[in-house]
Length: 169
Image (cartoon, rainbow, N blue to C red; front, side):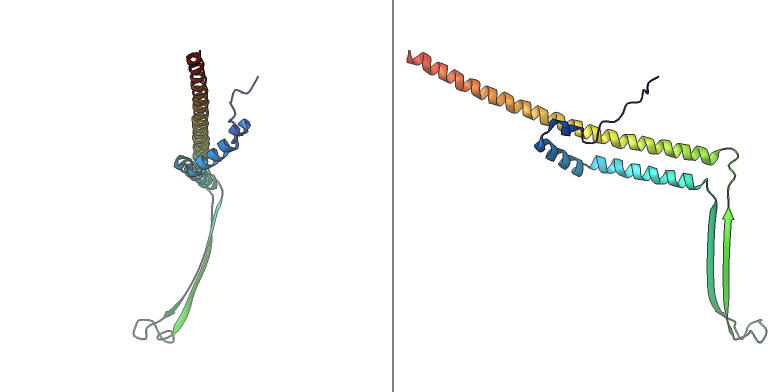
C-alpha cells in the first residue's frame, strides 16, 4: 500500500530554473510579503497553544515565599510586650496538583491543539507556495513577452529589409 499524502515542494523549488534574477525577485517577495508574516505568526500562536494544552496534562507545582515586617500598634488590643513592637511575618508554601484525566478532556484538548497547529502549518506552506508560484508565473510570462517582443522586432527588421529589396528592383 502506498502513502497517499502528497509532499510539499521544496522551499526553494524555483531554483531548479537556475536563474539568479528569479532568485533575487523571490527573495524580495518572500521577505516583503505580509501574508507570510501573518501565516507565520498564526503558526507560532498555534504552537504556543499546543504547548499550553500539553502542559495541562502534566503535574503542576507552585511555590510562594512571602516576607513582611509589621508593627503592632501600642494603642490596640495586642497585649504587651508585642504592643508597639516590630515583627517579621514570613510564609513559605509549596503546592502540587495533578488532574486525573478520566474522561480524556486534556488529551482531546491536546489533540485539537495539535490539529490546529498542523492546519496553521499547512496554511503557512500554502501561502508560501502560492506566493512563489505567482512570482514564477509572472516572471515566466514577462520572459515570454520579452521573447515575443524580440521576435516582433526581428520580424519588423526583416520585413523592412524585404521592402527595401523589393523597391530596389
